[in-house]
Image (cartoon, rainbow over all chains, first blue to last red; front, side, top):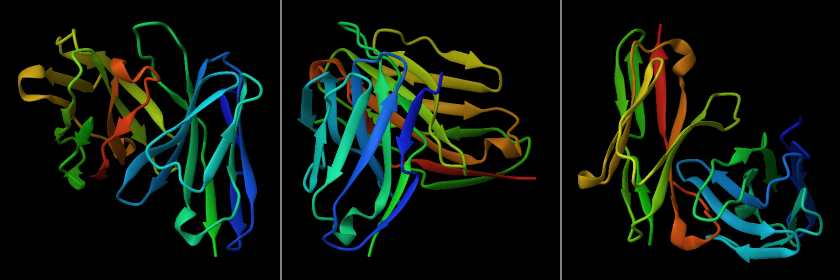
Length: 115
Length: 116
């Protein structure tokens, strides 16, 4: 099993450009998440999904959009990149069971620089 | 609102010393879950432990141990006889059942450097 994979691993964008980050998991997990990690800030939740076709906003959703058309994929889009979106982006997934939180499995991260 | 505080930004220890990483959390839920993750210099996030709010038993896994105290809202992590491979950033995280999505709120992390 590949677990959680992210594409691409690195990307440099110019201000105003758009891009999509792809997250894929092969563990049949219901829940998927997108986080960003900035120095000294820990990880902050951007958007999440509790199942195919559903998405919701997290702590820092502005400037991002997401889609979950297939259970195994969770896409993060930047419509008009800004330097403040320079960060490392992590995707994660976890099992779903009523009344229990399971550990999240993380992808390797995407390092994005916006100039 | 839930919150996780890791007051120690950076810690340096000499190999074989014991070290404790502190984690203090805030939540209004009675049912919640606490986690520790390790982020080595290579950058990936590695799950270490999950604990639910109804289980206050301490846990030991090899050189790692965790002390969960609801009375002080703390979930501290101790590494015994530290090794260079323990050098990493360690994150404590909280998940509330009331959120439904079980999203994680992370602390800002503690960077541990183990000096040979």
